[in-house]
Amino acid sequence: MGKKLKIAGAPISWGVCEAPGWGHQMGPNRVLKEMSELGLGATEFGPAGFLPAAAEERAKVLKALHMEAIGGFFPIVIHREDHEFVHALGSRRYRYEANCDQPCREGRV
Image (cartoon, rainbow, N blue to C red; front, side):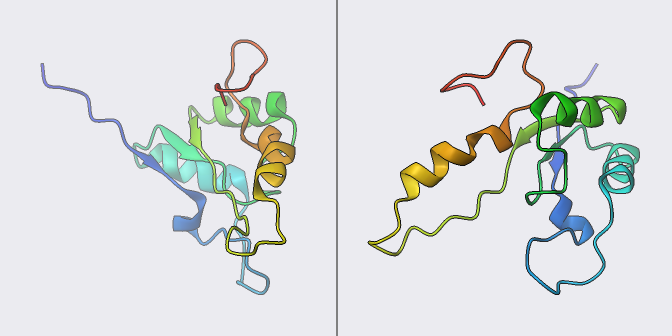
């Protein structure tokens, strides 16, 4: 038997974007269902607001559609000296927790 191919997708491939005025934004149920039907087994989280904010709820949405989380899109300013991006990263880390069998902790998001 051959090796099983693992492939993931991202909501941006369905037009889901954080840019204002981007156009029609499909909902997570449709996007994740179509990803799953195409054979994708995992996705990144998409922009803030695409999936529920609470990790447990986000995990339920993904599990219901047979999807796993593999990462997330994190818009952050790093080219300006007056912007503390390390602080911004720490304060937003909760957005990337899902599918953990125990509470996520530093180094395991």
